Image (cartoon, rainbow, N blue to C red; front, side, top):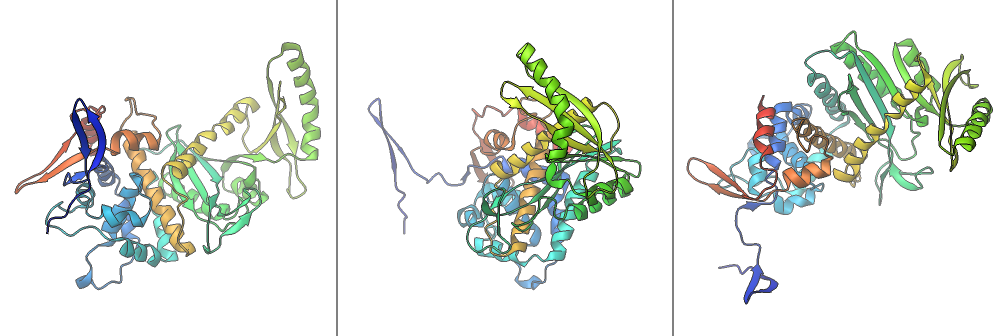
Length: 442
């Protein structure tokens, strides 16, 4: 029986009807996913994640290996398909099948939504911990030489929840029911931000909850690989906890951590703000001055150095406070602290471009596994971005990489000896493909 395909009308042009229909055959709209697959061959992150997951299924009845299911999920997330439901149609997409390692014709389609959902819900707590270690291993393996400095940026973000998700809770700061993921990125010797950890936490958590456990694990792994490396922790005032200061000081980890304003800090800052207000009134321009003082909150065992930013502009006073174990010029130290804003851009990419907050499973552990899949997609796209150094996409955001490199239409033809991929001749960035492939394979 011949299945009819609805035609889509687009009007008349010079006496001819313009019609369309979804009957082109083996054409994919995601030809660039093959670049993501090449990035995975280079990094091995999906293979490492798969090795961390046990598979108790009967091998005789298995059609989709753990690694194959991880590949299709991570590659799909990179291309903007964050739901298992997307594979109701994508499971037969010829390019996704190629990326996972199957021929477009003659081999089984990819896993279906129910299979993928069962898989995500089967991953246990111990396996998730092992999978989290893969992100750290990727960071270490990505540096042939031991760096002198590694800067760790810790930050919390909201992940709004809906329905009856386990451990969802109302968070007053964000004014919503949510989870509160902990995101850790790192820079080695001033290089790009790389993702080290993505830890899902209950919605009622304090911003610093679990930070010390994660910090211990990261520092131990970095020093195992690079015994002489110097480590700096940066974080906002949500992480201003005495136990973090104490542990860092006892383990030779430097820190720059924001402090929330209070009446004592305001009194210490007031003389500097008075001088800044007078200068601002005289010049009409914004004034920013940095000072430092010895300060100890009641919960601290001793005095610590606190940087005071006395900033005044036409909009008013803007004081800020940072506690640090570093010596040196307060202005340079505050500027170093302020650079953590770049790490926040990576969180925006994770949430806005890769839908990291698509934690819609009922089970908390299943949502943690999803978080790690999105983290893996981010790592692969970061590998691709790293191979674009010196090009017009060298600093492109994930959404731009997806739009310009991944979402490419391609006609797929399979013959006895070859699989032909025919991209559009008018593709504007086709000149980047040979370069990126060469760098990925070096």
